[in-house]
Image 1 (spheres, one colour):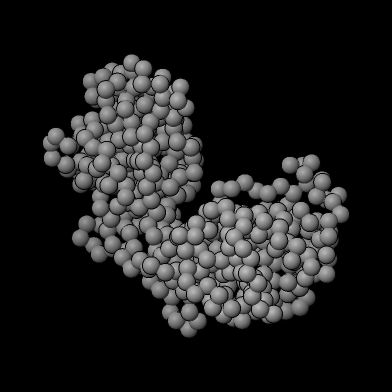
Image 2 (image 1 turned 90 degrees about the horizontal axis):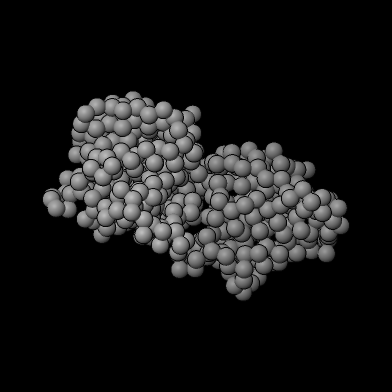
Length: 232
Length: 232
């Protein structure tokens, strides 16, 4: 790992001198000390993007939720659990030239979080979990004032229906530069799987890529980023 | 693995001919196609118990929720996600001589589960998650009619406060024979960690074991089970 890191440091890739922040994985939102709300993101796509940017010479900070896959070598990894912690870690890693928000950040955290394990009591009705909106990391980064606002902000849209419509809406609403849209319906096997079918939506339109490995999606995206920054 | 399985089959341990079912790990309860409620159980203690029973010659079925640790060799593993699926797998594995319910089964599943990903809508109040009680696997097994009712049913109590009180109450309520009580407060590091401090509560009273590795807890428990069944 040390050798790979030295290699990356010495590497004169097209993204040498470019600072990148990538978020990856799910977030966990605590219900009580033992229970939490999670999602099916494995972190494979986000980790692959971080690795691909590092391979082109970028100085990468990977902010990762709880995942079981290994850290890519040659980059800085900050591990977090909740969306709030992820936002804090991303803020701490700015300014950066490019930010890729690939994490499946929970939209909500638990408003009525308990400090002790909730007990099931015979005769009592089941509790309800009240939710409260999480801070929007993609929008926070996209709408930051110069000079904190990165030159390029890329968001992800994971949808189970009306993919392109939801993604275009997200691009407009969040103020990011590109949305990478992928269908995460159970039948696609995208969450947790090794391949992905994505569409890149930007101000100019929609670019649909064929199904390919998540590593290949990552390499193509890293190259597209390098070109957009005038580095390739 | 095949060799280890043959070794187990040929092994003349004290539990030879004894059929055991062990549940392990968390359960995941779906909120929608991408989100779910989970808990911090790693499956380490349950898997270790299954392995320890197999090492004494028992024929073991391990019913495991989603975990990231490897399957112990030499036993049958059935993987499930939800509490309902776990109950079905346990029922299918009966009759058995001994059942150890070490899984951290969710008390509730989601009553208002969505078939498509819940969307965050600007201006809309956040959704609430309505819960509904899950079937009680430990109680179902403990209160089964002869000859399905196993000779020995062992439950676990994972608590963050008033451990022995909650555990004794659970023993009486569930109708199981023993409760293994462990403190899973964050400070103890029990969930996900490698050691455990347990108390065995049965009709005769409480036996407190010193802190030890989860493997050692498992070996001691397997021996206690063998003695209770008159096999050691």
